[in-house]
Length: 118
Image (spheres, rainbow, N blue to C red):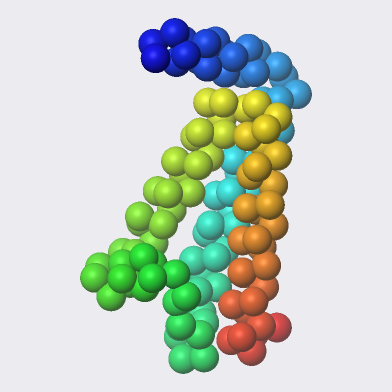
């Protein structure tokens, strides 16, 4: 197990040494944070209109439990994903994040469309 972790850490370090992979990782990390922020804003706008309700049961529970502070755990989750991308900027990691960014972008659009804001 230790040997496997060491090999993964070494590969991650080699990936971080690549300027191109790190530039892409920084871009993707920033996009993850950006779409997370706009998802939260569009959700709040939709909730304020009364035309949208939270579809994610965990986020709905957080909204009910902690009120407006639900944004903190949501953004911490996005920050953790961004940190993982920066720690291990392997091509497979970057490729797996691409659809997540696209799906979140669709969610933002959907929130705004359902709210009647676009």
